[in-house]
Length: 345
Image (cartoon, rainbow, N blue to C red; front, side, top):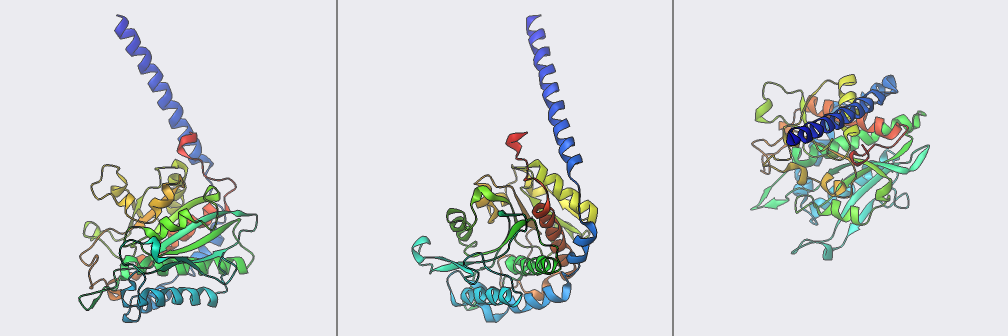
């Protein structure tokens, strides 16, 4: 009898706790309001297939020699990105015109040469000290056995998406719709050799990590994986709910309001054997308790092969996914309050 009573009490307590938690999540969801819908769509629609394609055919060409960390092709790619931001009149957070965060040779393992992250930003109008980081790695595997590893999807797709997102935010700001918070457009080096560029940034942040609201990380969003051959309108999201359920709910609501992609959480399972959550640059932000979303199209037959070329990109899907990330960043940058962390629920 005593055992039954105790078990019943624990059952009631557990049920009550679950009910309270569910109510909190429901309240979180109800409190997320999508604002500026017309304005968001106006500037999201400046992200276009022709521009994405133009940038990527240049970026994933012989000119940049596969963008191996510290190698000449990667240096050329860094200059390409710097010149793009100069052409758009988007400043660097490092003394306005210094777009490179230099990472010394001594930081890297083995014989890797010095490299650099490329940074540009738009200052917030109301809360400039708070920042939303949108990132993509711009390095790849370079040249191996005289073959160029072009890396059009990995991560040329994320690189050009970030360029277009930055341009859209700048156009909005120029027209009087600047974000409340600052937005950092962070092109990371040395991802392919162990997430070294993002580790360096989080150890030497330009914006304090405790003022970094979230990281949206883009790594391979231009292709369709075999699982989705009959359903192209999808994207894998990884990590959105790990540190902030509110970020997950906001992401869902943005998608439902504007784009209606299939948000696939297959690889967000903590028991997934691929461990993608730990395999791209968002992970170094998450290690510092910063909420993250990793946008990913899944692996395909050209992953980490010289055949990952720009002609195989699905540019319509790349455009749609890029717009989703832009709209999500817009909501984060313009919401009234910072995200609620799971530990506070």
